[in-house]
Length: 121
Length: 121
Image (cartoon, rainbow over all chains, first blue to last red; front, top):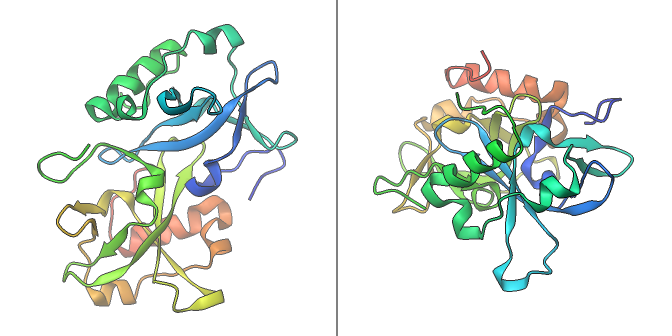
């Protein structure tokens, strides 16, 4: 399913969930815990990235735009082109907050923070 | 997360997987086994619907356009506006076939069969 450059067009959600995510420096950020789907627009809202569970019960998640996740075959995970500083300053949400306002709160803040062109315009 | 009409905009993929699917007559068609994501376009290619496993090893799956799945709160599952005949005649694929040609073979045949407007044009 993976092309020579490590890119794949069709990817089952179940295979994305549980995959590691690395930052630009190759450091592990966390794991893709889920993928938020947009029921009405046919779009993928964002990937839900967990920090690895060390926050426990009150765990917070990053909403990361799907389009910036770049699969790195050698690492077996996704790389995002963000620095540790950008990620540290990124908005983080509880599970309930991720779907607040039909997911638009987390989605909009995330795309703005990472300066990713909105897919919904 | 669900609105008064049973619709939800933001829905985690993990919650979609495992949900029952019913046809227009209320008969159970099968279960959503996975959601095929389009890595390069930010689109949801189709839902992968299994017939319930009675085909065993050689199980075949329907590729059903995401936009036609209508959540029915009272049933706790998705309803598709297709007759038993339409579903019986629908193209069905093995797991490998679902991602063949970057998923476009199953996607294109499915949208054509169910007469759903392509999201990728």
